[in-house]
Length: 205
Image (tube, rainbow, N blue to C red; front, side):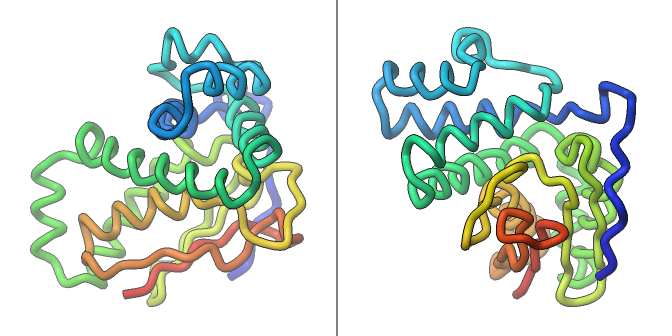
């Protein structure tokens, strides 16, 4: 799949994304760590204020980059990916509860899986500005479906022998499992952190 060049817009809104990559991380951290440790990690990411007043609107994507980088540096990659996956699942649940109308969810449940997949991918593509920020999303609707983000903020600037974007993989997987088929599984097959041109997520069932 050809990946377009990253177009860095001068519009500040192009560098902002929804707050789930921060707020859901706080939730999963608080399940495993004392508040003092959560505060320490958020302070290292320079977003400590979000613990007292969780953001309810778009946030600077660089804040997301810093937080996920801090988790990997301070807790280790394996732990950070587990936490990111948990936050991704919660993000999928939040979208299902608050952003995707119930009628649409029922309609998708009636459709054959491959047709429902195409509809869902179209909706994800139209709302890419809410999670890709300054990155560029490309979608392949043919089976197996793929989503690629060039300029992914989760792993921006990172180098790793393994993919790092479990947050996005888990959120996409949750949506597919609930709206397309329970057997859907999402794998990040390429990651910018490993030297790839984009972070690519493949959906199989």
